[in-house]
Length: 494
Image 1 (cartoon, rainbow, N blue to C red):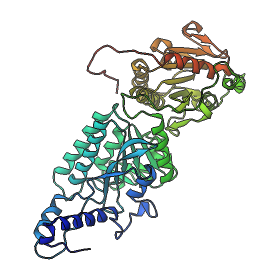
Image 2: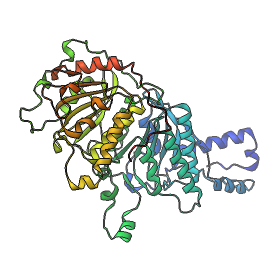
Image 3: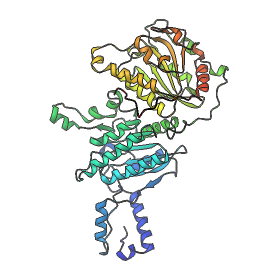
């Protein structure tokens, strides 16, 4: 490393040399540090960003910024011929770039360089890039690998946590927010990912919890390991925090790219449209003959609802969300004529497709996300009712079912519902019924609709013609305009 003297630092040439050195240090920071055990052999922050962003599109913010203490130390060393203090921007990379030609803002923590803990300095870098994302109306992607606040810091670190969280809330429903948990994210740091629209975790390497195993054992006596407590599989199957369980870092990055392809940059834009040619409206291309045979003759025999969903979507491509959580409901994204749609569907393969606490919350979240970002919702219904059980009643099925009702009734995007077999009891109303405001309700001849009967539907259609009717319905609804009564905000039953 070159020595910068007090004289050199005051000249233009010296300052340019100093800037080049500092940028070089920031880019190559961490090459002489020990890699965190959980990501041994994994990618550094900049390697992750290289894989996520389009080639050559990344512009780093605050690459040469220093901790306040480092600035003081640097001032003290000037004039004595000693080396300047090493930059402390390492451990957190922030900036903006493009994914498939569309702007995004990013921050990426890297414990391969520092301990990854969110201190006041790093927090200010994150809030700066969050402000940038809100001002420019582009998605925010946070790659988290951190601990709790640095114990060396005073109240500044918890305070900056609050600044980050406030921005997460203000950005909610305005720009898409996606969090990748690439290592450990613990303590107060967990709340920022929890406030984002989507959380992606990597199997066997991601951990997310507020209190660690040692704290839990000390306070409650419970003995639990890191992976069981807050691993990616736990949050994908039990808590529902994770929207995707990635096999590795590359899979996590690819899932984020796929998610972005279905979402607009902000709530004032329409979702991106793929240029694939549409099916001929009445042509053989949009007929799906296998759907005429998919519903079993026996009313209680299960079938895989994914085999109904996929043929209705372009090229059968369906990006599922929370696939391992509440498997009695299926949610995700697809396209019809190149236009993104959100999918909510009962899954007869699990609990006969009954609604329970987790299923209601999972479906409601997808619907509200779609409504926030102008994505139509397509619902497939085969629901015999709410799942019975004392545990369900004690867990608040009444309140959670109300969340699903709220989500459908509040949505102003195009809503289309297809009843494939059962729509019974109170679950009939809850699953995107006409009475909650759905624009187009279609029924297969195999449908058994209790309570209201078939007169609550717009048409009875052949299953093989489902894609045709969905295409026509979405075309007609693209000009839909609906507003809700003026209010500050509703009071969803949380």
